Length: 264
Image (cartoon, rainbow, N blue to C red; front, side):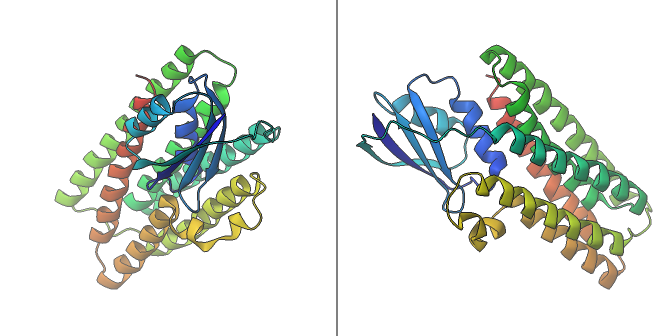
C-alpha cells in the first residue's frame, strides 16, 4: 500500500471535494481518500503507481500537484457510515437557499442574489450527483453529470443576457437591504455546511480553522454581494450589483465545466 499526498490549490470547499471523489471513483487501486480542505491537501491510499490518479486530478484543473509518495502499512480506514446523511443535509441547505435567493433576487431586482442562488444550485448538483449515483454504474454517474452541467450553463447564460438587458435598459436600483440581509443568512448557511462536513472527518478542531471558512469561494461570493449591496446604497446605482452578478455567473459556468469533465 502506498500513500500519495497532493496539494490542490483550488479546493476551497466540500463541493470541490465531491468533484474529486467522483473523478477518482472508477480507479480500482484506490483504497481511501483523506481530504484536508483547510490546508488544501488530499492524501490517497492506493496500491501500485500513482500516475493514473495524478492524471485524473490534473484533468479537473483545480491546481493539483503531487507532493510525495511513500509506502504505508495502514490498511484499516474509518468507515463514513453517516456520509450519506451529511450529504443530504448540505444538499438541503444549499437547495433551500437557491430557492430563497432566487425568489428574493427577482423580487428585489438583484442580479447578485440571482447569481449567488445559481452558485448554491451548482453545489446542490454536486452533492446530488454524489448521492444519486451511489451504487450506480459509472455510465449513470456521467449521464447525470452531463445533464447537470449543461443545465447549469444554460441558467448562467440566461443570467448574462439579463445583465446585458439591464445595462442597456432603465431597470430600477435593486433593494440593497434585501441583498445584504439575505447574503448574511447565506453566509451563515455556507459556514454551517462547511462545519458539518469538516466535523464528519473527525479531525480535532479542523472545522474551526478560520482559513477554511474565509478561503471558501462560496463565502467570498456572499461577502461580494454584501459589499455590492452597500455600494448600491452609497452610489444609488445598480452597477455594483450587475458587476458582482457577472462575476458569479462566470464562476457558475466554470463550475459547470468542471462537472462536465466528469461526463467524459
